[in-house]
Length: 425
Image (tube, rainbow, N blue to C red; front, side):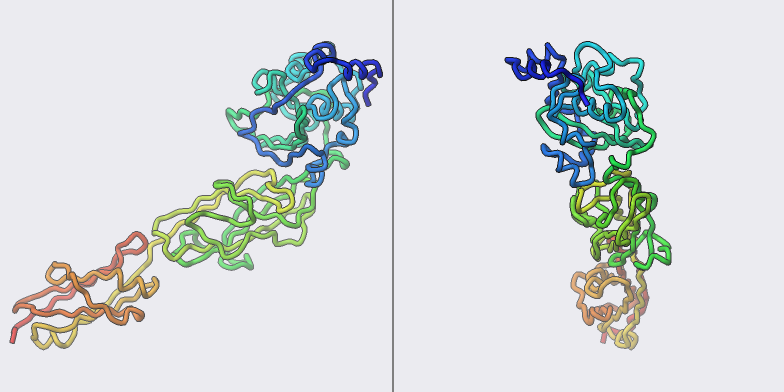
């Protein structure tokens, strides 16, 4: 705890302006956090209980935030919060350098302890790159190969937890990390909250997940079962973790897309509960719409989320499915009327397709002697049978061609027959 004399606290309260107080005592007056466009807010609240209720602790600071540590301004303030956490980790309650305590100078005043390598318990430091002229500091709660997770307080604002990815040019990445009192393990009293890692995405024929799907190239109307294996790397037991689409962001427990794919079930955590260190299985069906165009693809980035806590800080995994063309077949049977040398009759095309019957008739094209028939009489479409009435044929050889398909979602098949009209009487 702070050993700051009572007279210093009185001076703080009696100062006529915050600027004078800051100049006299080196207090930090941070009013904004670093640019957060490239970070994910895990929790945020004026009350510390907001984050605590979601599994993101404050290290006990909320109950002690009225006290000034290292001569920093108390309550919501980034430097006071970080100083408190460092004192809890065994550091002296006296600030280990002289001069201003503004976050802007922390890395500069402790250059020998500052580098570019994050560590558990180190202090993330933003100097001149921060949007605030007074800088910012945060406590590093978690580190892995893809991200860091920090807890932070903000002057006159909110207490937050957020994850910051290790991406090139990330504007939210700290200018450095100050190693005052790094930790080797996460304290049992300060568990990391909702953190996971998607290990694999697999596709199956059924929801028993026993027979792998042979392909992810699906015909319209067909569906496939998808499972994700997600490691619980945090300190909370999972009971309601699901998957959600990162792009577009979908903060409900469904995989959503405006056109494709549709789903016939919500992604769910199959196990009743998943303890820290265990792996959850999340499964759901994806069905290709009947009207999906052949060659269409769906590429969607997925991340875990909890109905209780919102987004789980984790890596993302991508699903990729495509629509295949339908295979169609057709047989053409020449009617007896034409076979008996008459100049009118009926041509019957029997079509077999994997597509719905209503679409069968609409995709039939008939040509006689290379000329497309404008008027085609269609009968018994529900059985895949198309009847074409032909009249006024002249004597001689004729060709009838029947085509089916050829749209974006169907492969084209064509059958042709030839016959001869020997009499027009």
